[in-house]
Length: 66
Image (cartoon, rainbow, N blue to C red; front, top):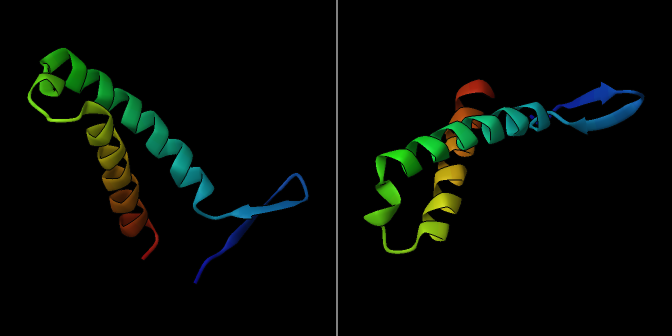
Protein backbone atom coordinates (compact mmCIF):
# COMPACT_ATOMS: atom_id res chain seq x y z
CA UNK A 1 0.00 0.00 0.00
CA UNK A 2 1.61 3.29 -1.02
CA UNK A 3 1.79 5.83 1.75
CA UNK A 4 2.24 9.56 1.59
CA UNK A 5 4.31 11.65 3.96
CA UNK A 6 3.16 15.10 4.95
CA UNK A 7 6.05 17.54 4.51
CA UNK A 8 5.37 21.26 5.05
CA UNK A 9 1.64 20.62 4.40
CA UNK A 10 2.41 18.85 1.10
CA UNK A 11 1.83 15.17 0.51
CA UNK A 12 4.90 13.56 -1.02
CA UNK A 13 5.31 9.91 -2.00
CA UNK A 14 6.65 7.60 0.66
CA UNK A 15 9.45 6.46 -1.64
CA UNK A 16 10.94 9.96 -1.82
CA UNK A 17 13.23 9.54 1.24
CA UNK A 18 14.33 6.16 -0.09
CA UNK A 19 15.09 7.75 -3.46
CA UNK A 20 17.19 10.47 -1.81
CA UNK A 21 19.14 7.87 0.17
CA UNK A 22 19.69 5.76 -2.93
CA UNK A 23 21.07 8.74 -4.82
CA UNK A 24 23.70 9.20 -2.11
CA UNK A 25 24.44 5.46 -2.08
CA UNK A 26 24.70 5.46 -5.87
CA UNK A 27 27.22 8.32 -5.86
CA UNK A 28 29.42 6.39 -3.41
CA UNK A 29 29.17 3.14 -5.40
CA UNK A 30 29.74 5.00 -8.68
CA UNK A 31 32.91 6.64 -7.38
CA UNK A 32 34.14 3.28 -6.09
CA UNK A 33 33.48 1.64 -9.47
CA UNK A 34 35.32 4.45 -11.25
CA UNK A 35 38.36 4.15 -8.99
CA UNK A 36 38.50 0.37 -9.29
CA UNK A 37 38.15 0.55 -13.07
CA UNK A 38 34.90 -1.31 -13.56
CA UNK A 39 33.78 1.03 -16.34
CA UNK A 40 36.67 -0.07 -18.55
CA UNK A 41 35.20 -3.58 -18.65
CA UNK A 42 31.56 -2.80 -19.46
CA UNK A 43 30.17 -2.32 -22.94
CA UNK A 44 28.25 0.92 -22.30
CA UNK A 45 29.14 2.80 -19.10
CA UNK A 46 26.10 5.09 -19.19
CA UNK A 47 23.73 2.16 -19.53
CA UNK A 48 25.56 0.35 -16.75
CA UNK A 49 25.14 3.36 -14.45
CA UNK A 50 21.39 3.55 -15.13
CA UNK A 51 21.02 -0.18 -14.50
CA UNK A 52 23.09 0.09 -11.31
CA UNK A 53 20.87 2.87 -9.97
CA UNK A 54 17.70 0.96 -10.91
CA UNK A 55 18.98 -2.15 -9.14
CA UNK A 56 19.99 -0.19 -6.02
CA UNK A 57 16.71 1.69 -5.79
CA UNK A 58 14.57 -1.37 -6.46
CA UNK A 59 16.46 -3.50 -3.98
CA UNK A 60 16.41 -0.96 -1.18
CA UNK A 61 12.75 -0.09 -1.80
CA UNK A 62 11.75 -3.75 -1.72
CA UNK A 63 13.71 -4.35 1.47
CA UNK A 64 12.34 -1.32 3.31
CA UNK A 65 8.74 -1.27 2.06
CA UNK A 66 7.61 -4.81 2.91
